[in-house]
Each structure stands twice: as structure tokens, then as C-alpha cells.
Image (cartoon, rainbow, N blue to C red; front, side, top):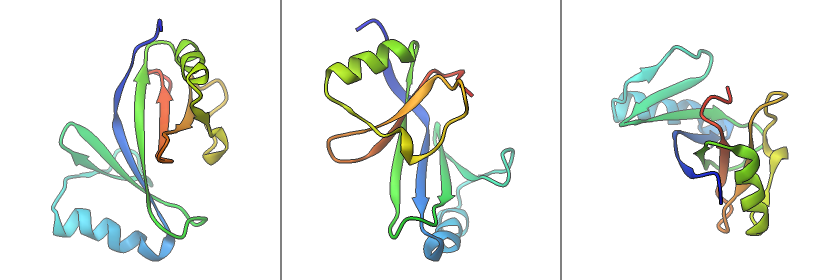
Length: 120
């Protein structure tokens, strides 16, 4: 494989509306994580070297954790993942036009964003 895949910095918890406010309060008030306010209305927290994002997801009935991978060459990484039989699931959340990345799932159905670090 010509493109290395490695852990990113973003972790997202997709939370149904009936759990959203309590989840925000848990990380902010109970745990005491430092809020990230630079990307409002998105709500995030400093999570050690990572960023933990809490996303309200009206179509979900239970919370899911989504993770991020970085790669230096998304096209090469996508080819490698395809050859390995990894399932693409780009329909789970729309990405901007021309974005150098895509969505996959692990065998345990954990959603991962695979992207070039400067894709945003």
C-alpha cells in the first residue's frame, strides 16, 4: 500500500435528541472537559490530544461512536481498503464536494472517516 493510514484527532458521538443535552452536561459539568467553542454551533470538548464532538442525530435511537483516520493519499487508501473488502458507507453523512475522504465501517460496524489531514 502506498498511502499510510493512521489515527486522526476527531472522535464523534452521534446522540439521539432525547439524550443530547444530558450528554453535553455529562462531559462539560460532570467530567469537566474543556469546551471547544471555535466551531459553533458544533459542540466539542478537548479530550487529551483528541477532540470529542457531540452531534445531535435525530434519525438515531441510540448513541454511536464514530472515529477518524488520516491518510496522505485518500485515493490510494480507498483502493487498498476496497481490495481488503472494507465496506464504504458514504451515505451515512454527506461530505463537501471535492472532499478528499470517505466513510467506511469496521467489521463491528464502527463508522470511520478516512481523510487527508487537509481535506477540510
